Image (cartoon, rainbow, N blue to C red; front, side):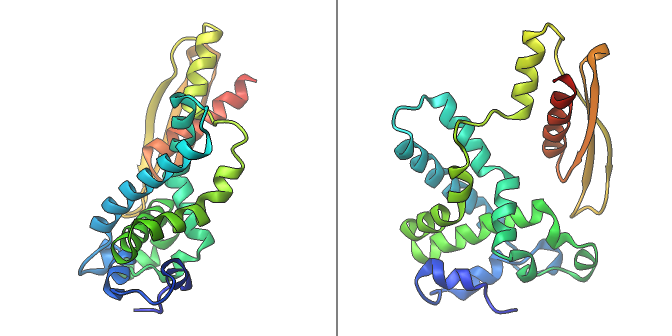
Length: 220
């Protein structure tokens, strides 16, 4: 495999005890052999625990609802993918030939999955303290820009529609395209005669979020 990303040694304070964990964390299903899926499952839970604990400590007087909105933004696949791009993970992801030709290593879904898998590997290799240090170092820029708890576009659209008596937003899957390992979804959201918007994303949820944000702009 290619050389392990330099951040691995930095996160662990030295060379990993089990390099094979990190090889697996970087291996996409198209490559064959052990893949990142089990490590991703673990890393997702580690990320959730670390972020929840961090927010509880950082915002001691904030109610659960606001902390939940912060939490959802920080653990979102888009945020994980941005962390991965910043760490140059796409150049290290092990892919099968067709997946590489399709640039699956540049898919937000794949990059986000690998970030969580790497976090799972860091946890198994170095323990929760090192995993927490890794999360705080790489997610800190996203927390620092949250001057107030973010409101998810779908929630914001629903709240605005209710306030103006525009009805309930309806989401419709318009199309799905692309390879199986790197799909693209197009979604339409509408408020009847009051407006509609379409958007694309690497997942149905991501497309719905983008469509809601677009319709919010139209309603301003």
